[in-house]
Every structure is written in C-alpha cells, then in structure tokens.
Image 1 (cartoon, rainbow, N blue to C red):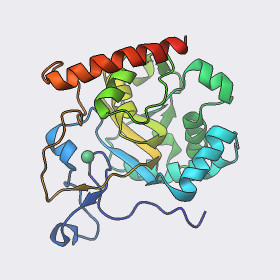
Image 2 (cartoon, rainbow, N blue to C red; image 1 turned 30 degrees about the horizontal axis):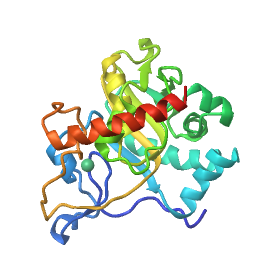
Image 3 (spheres, rainbow, N blue to C red; image 1 turned 90 degrees about the vertical axis):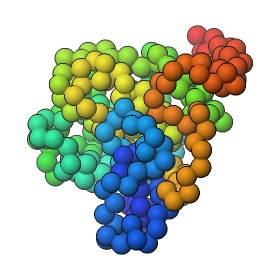
Image 4 (cartoon, rainbow, N blue to C red; image 1 turned 135 degrees about the vertical axis):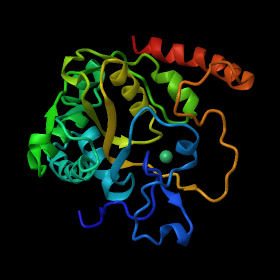
Amino acid sequence: MTAVRPLQGAYCAVCGEGLHIPMRLDAGGGSNDDVRCLLCQRIDPPFERAVAYGSYEGELRDLIHLLKFQQVRPAAKILGRMLAETMARLEQVMPVGKIAVVPVPLYAGKRAQRGFNQAEMITRAALKRISRPERFALCAGVLLRRRETGSQIGLTRHQRRQNLRGAFAAKDGTQIQKRDVLLIDDVLTTGTTASECARVLLRAGAARVWVATVARTLKIFDVIALPEIPAEEDWDEGPEGTDQRLRDQCLGDQCLRDQRLAGHG
Ligand SMILES: [Zn+2]
C-alpha cells in the first residue's frame, strides 16, 4: 500500500475539502487551522469537523471496493490502520471525556446481503490498534438506517438531502447523552450522509458530532475567487421553498424518487 498516502496540502479546517490557497496563507508549514472552504464560510455544517485519511481514488478506492463489493474482509485491517491514524489526529483536538464512536449504519437488508457493515468493520479494526483506546467507546447500535436510499450518484446536493431525509433514526440515545460523538464512514463524498446523521445524533442528545472517514472525494475549492455558491450547495436545512426554481426541480424529482423507493419496498 505504498501508493496510498495521507492527504497533504491545504484543506478546509471544518469539512476537509481541498483548497487552493495563496502561498502567503500556505507558508505556515501546512497549518491552516482557520481556513475554510466557501461552503463552510457561508454556513456551519452540523458537525464540528470532518477529517479523512486519503483521497478517494487509486489504490485506496480499490481497497474500499474490495471490502464493500467483493467482501474481501482482510482489506478492513488495512483500512482500519488508516482510520486509526485519522482518529488519533482528530482525538487531539476533541474535548476531554469519553468519545462515543458511531459507525454509519447500513439498511438491514443491505447488511444481510453484504454480511457486514463495512463502516463498523473498519471502526473495529481501527479501535484495535489506536494509540489511546481508553478514549473511545464503540456505540454501534445508536443509529438506525430505516430504508435503502439508493444511489446518490448524479444528484445535486439538494436532491441528496431530499433523498436522505428521514432515512436515519436514533435507536438508542442513552449512550451518547451530552457526549462528543465520532461518526465513522468509509467514504465522505458531499458530506450529505454525515450531515444527516449528525443532525439525528444532535437531536438524540449528542453534545457535538465529529466525523472521520478513511477516504473523501476532493473537489478543490478556490478560496481566492468568491463565486456565487449555487443554492443547492448547502449544509443546512435552510428555509424550504425560498427558491422556486429549485423547488420545482425537487418536486419533479420527488416522483422519480418515490418510484425508486417503492421499488425497494
Ligand atoms: Zn469546508
């Protein structure tokens, strides 16, 4: 796995998105603690910070696919080692106290089909080799995925939010009351799943939610140019119906989605 390297360069201090930033800002030896991407400058996501080990491409992507789609379980060990590094890095900036670790759940049918939840398997592998295991408590049963959400590929952020709305629920909030929760997933793409889970966890009593993933897709924002961000690029719920064009678009998509969901029973 020599080809898989941790992320290097400048990243949004909140969501981990890649940044093009000027030399002036980048001169501090890679320390850009306050630099935010355009989206996070505009609206705070429901999680404190999202960090990833590497970019979702090449061998790292292959490794995740081996585990998820070909059930090559030993891949979880390697991915777990990467996740452990990421969790250790994040743990240093998290408040003192026990951290509740919550893997993003799969829908029961999907889990049965695959035989395991890859996020939970990678989490367990990471916790076996993390430097300060006493800081973490695995709380795998906190979140529940109530339905299959289908492929998110090709959807706008707004459509993804619509697609995931109500998909997650807190099954048992007692383990996370007033605690910092570390949400774990294999890949972070737009952050929609992480945001939706974070909202549910906060509503269930979590003090704060943090996110760690093995990989993430990088769009690379430019923090110098400040173009208008499209309305669908939004972390938050936002006032519904403020944009007629978007609403029309979503109502159109609703029919398609309902059909797709109906297909999943
Ligand atoms: Zn950001």
